[in-house]
Image (tube, one colour):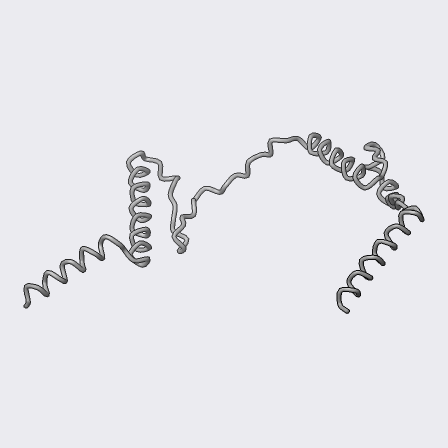
Length: 146
């Protein structure tokens, strides 16, 4: 009986290895990160450049000793201004306003209210056709209820 029990334990161990749990995977991930950190540290020691030292921040990430330098934008201020003016012109066109890019920068242009679109009016004849059709529909609904 004990032979069968040991075979069962061995089978369970094999099963556990084939489908690791989440806690096992997270532990393996932490170990892998530590290995990578140690390998990087070893490379820096062997190369003689100690300035690339880093330390753990406690959340599994590493903080570099060098301050990160912000990359310069690939677009000039003049280019951004042209794009912004073009977008304002598109908005003005969609809203029915007259867009003048030269006057957009002035404060007087910003203070004026946008021109509203003129509302379309329905002809009296079209309105009467809609009213008659609606009355016909309601009469049909009321007739079907009786």
